[in-house]
Image (cartoon, rainbow, N blue to C red):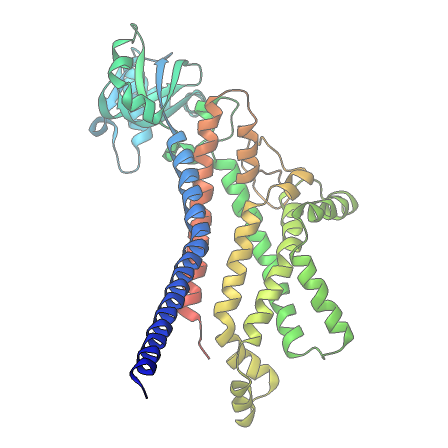
Length: 417
């Protein structure tokens, strides 16, 4: 080979290497761009979630300039704290600050009717700040005059200005709308007195009945369709309809519940009608989750059990269900989480937006957390926005606990075959 030919060959080889290098660089750049593009939606979703949490959490606290109708006194944490009787201790201090003697205050609260009236008019709260003093007990009255309401962050920034602008008889308080008293109070047309007790208990009643009604039927249906039902056109039609029902808008179930349970059966807008309606809503989800969990159990385990002489029912009860319990439980919890957050079907079947008393049975009128939030958001009083934000935080915490439990159960009982 001549010198010229060798130079040409070396030049071609170098060019080939450069071409390969350029192609490798383009592929690496394309890979990085694709990774960033697929990760961008995750970043956006997390950012929007963080924005939502920031908004509802900060809105569940506010600085307020208040002209109290009561004594206007606040009490140190140690003065009013008791392990199980702080409410009474603070109430006694407030009555004495209003001019009663200690025996008169004790007699006032010893009378059941007077105690009920005091509790109906007043809310005892542990405020984070009262006139610059931290952790003070304050008795707020339903007729207190709220002169100004300032958002949490703005209040921190303007704290000194707000303090110097106070007039005689006014107080600056950092009001935690989400506190222990919020869970104990009944519904009220006054933001200060409004609480979650009826809607929280109503949610527990409805979801408890949904679990009792929907879970046995749906899990049994899933096991039967997967283990017993023959594979023919009928079961194929059932499969299609189950998948379709799992995606039907919830308002359709509300129309069905209104027609069948509320009107045809004559139940009316009560807890049982809501539970039956939501049971119809979640049953397809649980059936599909059960079938997928049962289907994931390897046939080799079934055949081994049959080889040991077990009957079909023994195989299902002793082999299939224990190995499918993680998927079934996860499906049930996710279905219950969806039921807790539903609003449209319950509004349609007549869930109350204001319940003056706690539900005491399946035939009681009721409200649930999403309905109560919907009601508060629609109120004209801007202070109800803080109450609604506090309720949203509670609802988000409940859903977070349920989803975390589902994730843990999936990890705990999941099987890799």
